[in-house]
Amino acid sequence: MSQLEIKDLTVEIDGKEILKGLSLNIDKNEIHALMGPNGNGKSTLLAAVMGNPKFTVTGGSITFEGQDVLSMSVDERSRAGLFLGMQYPQEVAGVTNSDFLRAAMNARREKPIPLFSFIREMEGTIKDLQMKPDLAHRFLNEGFSGGEKKRNEIVQMKMLKPSFAMLDEIDSGLDVDALKIVADAINDVRAESGMGMMVVSHYARFYNLLKPTHAHVLVDGRIVVSGGPELVEKIDTEGYDWIEKEYGVKV
Ligand code: ADP
Ligand code: MG
Ligand code: MG
Image 1 (cartoon, rainbow, N blue to C red):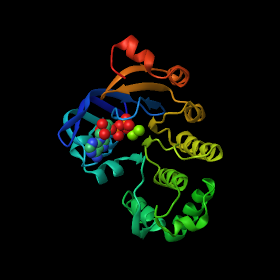
Image 2: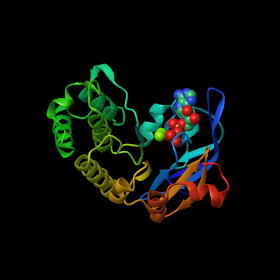
Image 3: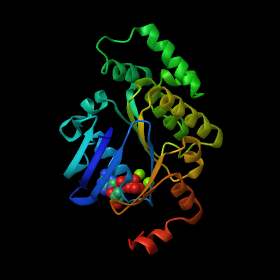
Image 4: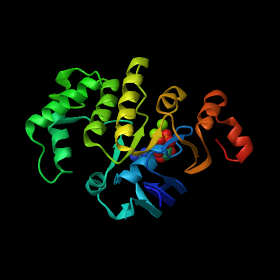
């Protein structure tokens, strides 16, 4: 049994079928690159695994560490160890970044984290991501630059220590230096925890830093090609046209 098992998943938004029978198994220590042209259901897949209520699962199953994910609330999924770093992190006025993080950490613990340990850890993590210290005390994502929002998702991941992480275009909006900082932080967490990962990005430059073990191309709500890291390179140099020819799907 793999850590995360997705079987024949179908998902709708507003009555429109987006995922059309998608199956994928991911184990601990594996990192799966998810590629494909825009609008084919990558974000939908991640959102459905995390339990975003906008997306209606109409069929199939998702099992995480033996548990039936589809019967769990978003909170339960998070407590079970699932994490989603979002493509468009929400701005939340009135809740500071540090209050949000502390609440999220405490929700997953028996006893609340002592305040000083929390502050020490948060300051250390913000420093690791080379972010400005005042970002801890500002409202969550409010007025953050695109790059700061993305780094902040990784701050959350580092502190929450999920056992499985999904990252949705976390590299978009990052300059070359920030890309390296973010990738280093992700690799640190992976090395420590052995978490499984599903990573959506359009760029080989990012994948080269993360070193995926598997790669998949999603077209029209289904995985049409799977392979190893060489698939990332092929798409980076040749694009998606060859998939249309070889697999007979409209890309
Ligand atoms: P990708 O991440 O591969 O670019 P998405 O999963 O975001 O693709 O989108 C897949 C399809 O679902 C697209 O046609 C998109 O327009 C549609 N879609 C995504 N989110 C919504 C939404 N909130 N309401 C309606 N349609 C949506
Ligand atoms: Mg996209
Ligand atoms: Mg997307």
